[in-house]
Image 1 (cartoon, rainbow, N blue to C red):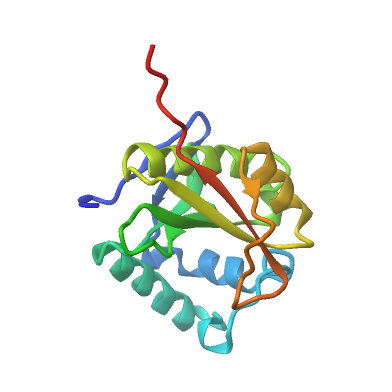
Image 2 (image 1 turned 30 degrees about the vertical axis):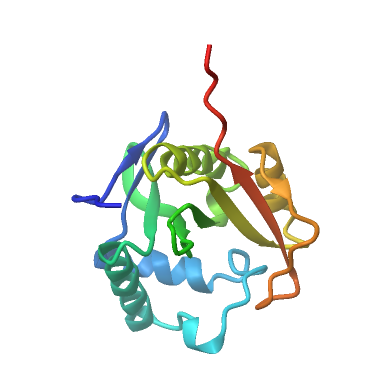
Length: 182
């Protein structure tokens, strides 16, 4: 997991880039907007309440990347560097074979296929560049948009697993596809 510089990902319409301190206003919005955070339950010490907290959060994810603990991308449209959402791989297993994916998106950009495109590219990055065996997603049981997104992208509901930290979450996973040997 040695990446220097930060791994930027480009898709047909998007650029997934490093989140900078100059993005603090949009990170504050994404972490406080009632629509974006409707299904996210953060402990009090992880809540972002002001721009100072947003900058602190950005510094934390930057440090986590340096320490090989997570990758957090800002999602931008190719023709505009302003972040419209975020997506991350984090909570790696000790052997770095399993990671959790997380994401959020500005409501003005929802229902346009942006998160579908970002998710596909980050799952591909996780399997091809990080050699992950599995990617997990924890989502609120009532978050219909997230449930549809995960199912559309071949994530499987894991019925017998529970999120010990949040009983409202359900867990999905996708395993690295086997390489066809022709």
